[in-house]
Length: 490
Image (tube, rainbow, N blue to C red; front, side, top):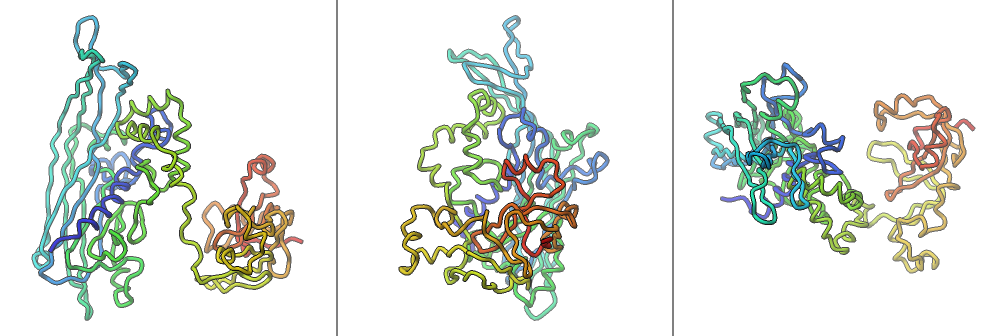
């Protein structure tokens, strides 16, 4: 039995985004401050690096549950990046020999030294019955190496050379399986990826460790004919066993399109089940959490000199620059205005002054006046003519004159709170982060009452004692709280 190739391709597209997450960030050249410290996700350092920094591990562990027969087969694909240093050499006009240089300019093209990365894969296959009897361990070794690429000018003369060099890597992939207790006899699968590299030279910095590291390490696990259980939305009978799974440095999610249950992606970035790359994305930007349109527009503003530097930094950055330079207008439009996860089709507008149902945590929603109509109201023949005739999108405040953050108000208890109201900030534990807690008990001025597309109410506020309040206000930068996270002072 085989895995569906379309499902594998779907999962690989997401895995590729994980592989290059943070590989190179805007503005995509080596001199950029944010590219001075690279590779933040899924880095498995050599064990000896613990003497430099014990925070970065040398191993990861994935545990997940599935239902399958003993004659099923487990197929594992471990993927990671391997750092390789690219040196630039130029032909000396004096002796004709090649010498290392920092940068080389040839016919308008720039070449520069840089730490690239190349993709590596390791595969493990084992039958379930064999795994139940004995663990399967695979040791792998990637030897050191070097490659050279000649650089010629427009007349075909040798003017330089790019020399790429990489260090050895050693590792072990461990696979273990056991049947869990209970009537369903689910299979508990454990995958461990370990870096066993022993650098010859002493490691003194993170850069030293990265040369022997497994970078952005992740795994695709497939069991044809099997059914993996979701780690976030599994069946009730497996809740205790799911909770007992120990995932260290990775998190397994159901991979492939909706309905695919025989494939798991174990990622160093926490994802939801069945993740996918946005259909609007025209190509990788090395930042999967970014909005493509915003990042694309920012990249298009780079100067010709900055784009030349980006192209010189990395071949993938060069491909990105070429793609965006040649992007047709319809591709940019495709990125614009995609809206997902709106309210369900059956929900309608909430009457002004009414109280909505409690949320999933049991907290009652606040009362709100002048709630804007839901999108469904725009299709209703009884909707106001002015609203139906509006050319503005339904989510644009200009589509409904009744929506006014400057004049709308919300009842907190029995007190109306609107723009200009003074409140005490009281961030609640269910939504607060560490920084919010520093604001507890401080006085603030309400700047606006806002409603999002899901009908939730938010108060934009400015702390009274903020010395930069006027500056923040001029830029429209505020703090945001739910109505139940403030106490009216008037």
